[in-house]
Amino acid sequence: MTTASLQTKTLTVKKENGIAEVHLHINKSNAYDLEFYRELNAAIDDIRFDTDIKVVVLMSDMPGFFSSGANIAFLKAADPRFKTQFCLFCNETLDKIARSPQIWIACLEGHTVGGGLEMALACDLRFMGDKAGKIGLPEITLGVLAGTGGTQRLARLVGHSKALDLNITGELLTPQEALDIQLVDRVFPQEEIREKTLEYARNIASKATYAASNIKLSIMNGKEMPLNVAIRYEGELQNLLFRSKDAQEGLSAFLEKRKPNWIGQ
Image (cartoon, rainbow, N blue to C red; front, side, top):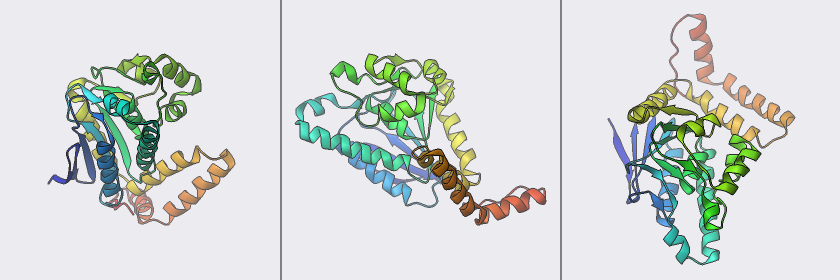
């Protein structure tokens, strides 16, 4: 049974069988302001503390748009100090996604630009429809930079020179172009993108999710460490997994030639 555990003006969270769907419905283009980020922050906290949730899919209910980013009129009316604090709060919120124990997938069915892409970059995976529109960071056309992870997460994803190119030109890419540079991980036919994303989520949720969570932590945290330190960190996480119930079950199931019964512990 699907339940709406959280419903606000700008988003709805639906939970079912280990998967949380976060549906954005801010306005026509999902242009956000502080109200949205406060509600997103609360939704992330709710999900992080829900041990039944293993995978999260972030998606839009607004046709043609994942998100166009921050509401420009909202930013224009704010003073510089407020804008700085707003960007800081957005970064702190998105960092919760990046460090969440769950796997987060951005399902991109429409235009994904500016702060919309920065939301997607905070997710672990990005799937896009083949007719979903454009994706990119056009902030330079406003005389600013992509200040909620756009310069940093993009560089770590596609490389420094390509990230610089995209940021200083403000070029918007097609889904195929985004796939070619690994900005998105998969491109599906437009009419199938949501179901394919949920199918992927269900597949991950049915596997050894405690191992998946630790794999995410190893990759996300390890890339910020020197290699020799990261290898030791990987080993410590493996040590935890060796002691887990899922590891005992996985090894037993392999030797007994049966399907494992994962419990996420």
